[in-house]
Length: 401
Image (tube, rainbow, N blue to C red; front, side, top):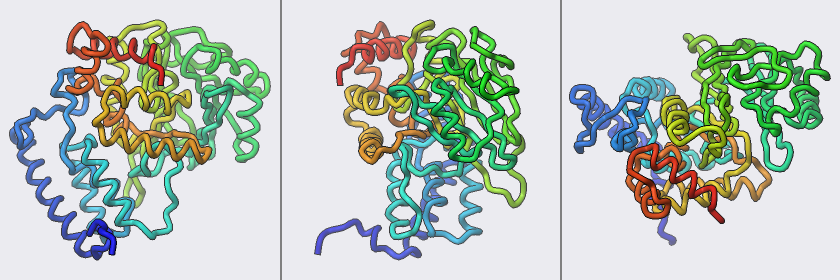
């Protein structure tokens, strides 16, 4: 007989005991954190919006990482599962760490043999269903446009449709009637189809940034301004750096989930600011702006937030990330999933904010290994986040891999 992990063969009752014990232990630790603001092992606890110090980017304990397992497996009864999930949501341990990879793997093993299909993206199966239906549309050489549909009303938008014919064909195949165009920034491979889309779809609302000139714009949003798409809110997050006026679009339900409804994951269209495993070039900005964009805006979002970026750069980005953090186990797992997706002809989107915090060096500028690489390989001027971010981007600009 081959040696195999005992967990695979353990009955669900035993796994339930293990999970419940872990849950109770970490609830006790959570109470200690709330009282002392200190992790049991002496690491300072920080709120969800990082303060840009080294200790701001610690990997938290395992508690928040139980959420994907509870959702994915037929392990716990519904009432116990709901109770655990409510406690997880209230816990201070809200960011996934490396232990998230371990627990998610446990959930995969425990759920083996169920009818759930495997994830077809670079993300592990999200803990929560998305708040909107999102359809990636590959365009040009490596761009993504997207169709986004409000599941309640059927109202639909397209995102950065630089090849209108392909986007409209995809909408027709899916039976989608577009009323809105969302444009993240001015570059031609994102905004170049706006005027043609407006001509082909009279009355189309072209929603974009107010901080730079965008073709065919009808609605210009400032930072934190909100556009309504059916029952969804589309919030503009101003992230200048790649271009001076770049915005992200954060899609959420207008109302919080009420009694009898299931929570959903927000959706982020990140344009050319954040990629899977990487970030955009600093064409019209600097390292300080990208630190604010990634660590100030994106990192403050819930870890379940699904990330849909503007390009299929994942393979190159993850190769660079591995050159920065070769011992990162979560990164190695991400590479395996991304490689499998690409080999099967699938896109590597979506990722999640939680995943990017684990594997993306540009979102890990406070980690000791990333700082060391930026200093030794990139000649970073200091260990502060801006110096590290600037050095990483210069390293990536010349990376061959």
